[in-house]
Image (cartoon, rainbow, N blue to C red; front, side, top):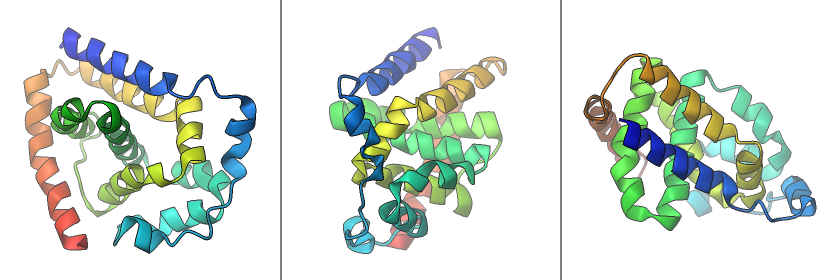
Length: 183
């Protein structure tokens, strides 16, 4: 469990280190307008289409929309975000971590994938279309903090990595079902 926690901490460090050398002018670019993007064409049929359209019109409204999500939804958004970020640099690691990240959400929040948590998960995996929002998430350590709190919360429950992965396997199947229904 310690090794996994160290690995997760390292991965989160890497995620937050990306783009730190950029100047503040780029970070202010959150004001960029994406309203000319056809979201439906870009991401396909999506459970989070309404949220993505809000972000496309006004990226600065991301935090407002994100705060409307409950704790479990915020976690699943961040789980998808972290896996998406990892898949760019370490696809094998990302695919190996899917069960763990989803299982961690079940263990910490007692809530698996349902229509609302999938909507947040889908929002997290599609947010990469909006670079300024991604930079905001990384700069403000939004997902790093949420995943870190979930990891700390599960520590006290003394669950093994195997237990968490088992919880996640059931929920990953639900994610696949939601994806298949939307296509």
